[in-house]
Image 1 (cartoon, rainbow, N blue to C red):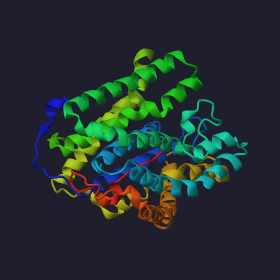
Image 2: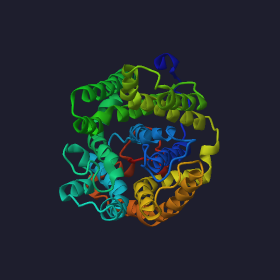
Image 3: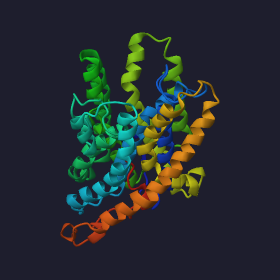
Image 4: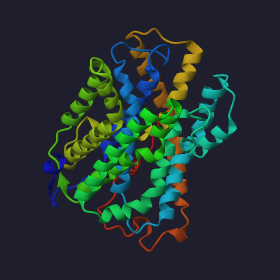
Length: 400
């Protein structure tokens, strides 16, 4: 259906700025925060609102949106002649500074305040963002737990300079076929792992960086299709309604189904959310390309999107520390005011982190890119693609 709806229009303009996608980063990060805030049921989380729980559980899959968006944006700004070393250098400057600054807070919240012994191999693996590669890491999500998806991003970054030139030469139709096969493979891996492995090993397999690569490929394929002039008439309300409908079905209406159907919905969750994420990105980008400036172009939302990486790195630790200090809140809708208040406080902290750590560190690191790695095209890398978007939408690493 997607292939039938897509139409080539080489004259269709593309925006040089991606403000709407930057704003969407905030909503994805906030969804993850809401998931951690409300917990998984029982006495987990800081407090549970009857209105948004269990639907807030979909926030755990906000990382799927980030993976798709990361693939999209990396391909969107791809410079064919840029040295892979330059690409890797800039990824380090983008990811590690604020990660290292936020790490002590995570260690304090999840080890010291929690009175948990430090397993040094696990903690060190999280510093270098390779924790998801090892099946017996203790705890399962060591260090600052949310950085497990940065470990997933790291594999994509390592492969991107090798894969992007090949993808850039492939026909759009074959890229879509490869993406569909990859997403189906993701679903099969979840199914086979659940059916044949011990629960702990199955969770490790399902979280392994290799399993998430089809989501990055989905974003890359969408970016290349748009670059090549393909368009899909789609109002943003359609994929958003699809996401809300899937969330309601999964968390509220799946219980009458047989166990087989319920399990298949679980295995299909990440591919389905990945496709819906890609369609949301596509719809808002095309809307912006037509010159429409809506709520996602609001300066405050764009700023929140810029701060979302820092927000993402500290939100879980702050929520956990609040739980230790104040105890769990009553499980009723009054906790929504606490959720919003905590989000405001975290965003103030993240403005500080972005302004005084993340942005200046990245600028300094980029400025000190070894000159011998830059080709004659300099910063542009001799790119044959249209101008890259603004810096704020360049990448969206995040984790749950």
